[in-house]
Amino acid sequence: MKRRDFLMACGALAVSRRLLAQGPAPAVSPADRWVQFRGTPSLTGLSATTIAAAPKLVWAWEGGEAFDSSAAIADGVAYVGTATGELIAVGLADGRLRWRYKAGEAIGESSPTIANGRVFIGDLIGVVHAVNVADGTPAWTFKTQSEIKSSPVVAGDLVLMGSYDGQLYGLNAATGKQVWAYRTENYVHGTPCIVNGVAHFAGCDEIFHAVDVKTGKERLNTSATAYTGASVAMVNGVAYFGTFDNQVLALDLASRKVLWRYEHPDRHFPFYSSAAVIDGTVVIGGRDRMLHALDAKTGVARWTYMTRARIDSSPAIAGGRAYVGSNDGRLYAFDLASGKVVWEHDEGAALTASPALAAGRIVIGSTEGRLLCFA
Image 1 (cartoon, helix red, strand yellow):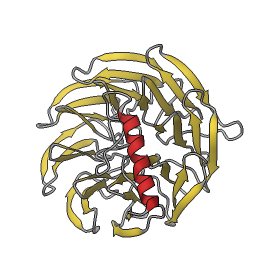
Image 2 (cartoon, one colour):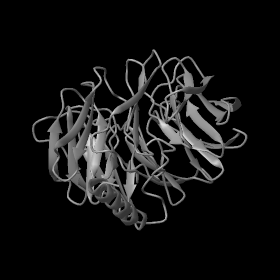
Image 3 (cartoon, one colour):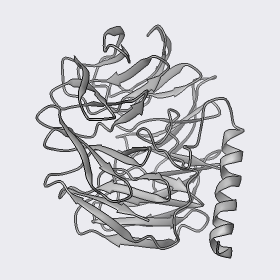
Image 4 (cartoon, one colour):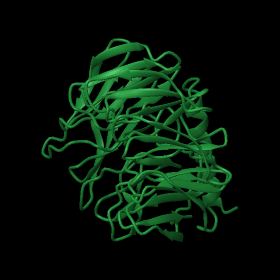
């Protein structure tokens, strides 16, 4: 192993150990897996894998239609939903199609989750699908009353999924039967963040909700201050998320108080990207075309970088670098300490999906139908 690669591996291991010490909920995705949107149920966007300093495109799978769904990775296979309504399984090493499963007419931003030999995903006609990992055959489906853009999260024997019918559902993962449903006053767009048996999300009803995973009973209901499409990242009892009121918030759950609000002094645009949080830094993309790195305690900007178009992609972090796509058609790698771009790939098509990091690889789909893998 080269000295540079050895130092990168040691750095990633040290980060992993610090993160795992934060609490019982896993805050970092294992090096070889990225089993759901944002990597882990706490949605912090962190991976223990080691990515090459200058990754190369090793394969591109031509899907023909847009990828808004972000990939999940397990056991050497990448899974992702397509605009044609298919869930596909592609070999991580070779980019070859393993199987394809036809869901609804289209799959939007809902991203797959892998657990117990199954892949779970929602589609834009409002159906939750459970598909067998081995061969892509259906296990069960469950129909909600409106489209699904939220990504599923598996907690024990339940699958949690939000719908545009305004409800968060708890479904039996084995059978697909509804165990409970929690109603809000508007769309449930974000993916639920699960920490210590509680699901947290900031809804489109401008309310921050906390729901008991087992029972579906409300544990907390407080103002999210604004319409929120982003998912929540949780670290040490603080929820970090951006809003359509052009702000990023840190909400302390114990006190129900907003610890800080960040808004760029000159550029006032919504935040649709979901935050990544590591070592006291919150990293989030904005529709102001910028990636923002904020101090997690104060909300003060440590650095910002302006791309050429808005950033709806949610950053993923590994080895001291943040990886994020932009609508300018580029996939970027930023040095977390300085905010400098240390690598980029110009795909020439908008990257609204979020990168998945595992096994030394980056997987992301483009709006022109190419699923890309870098290593």
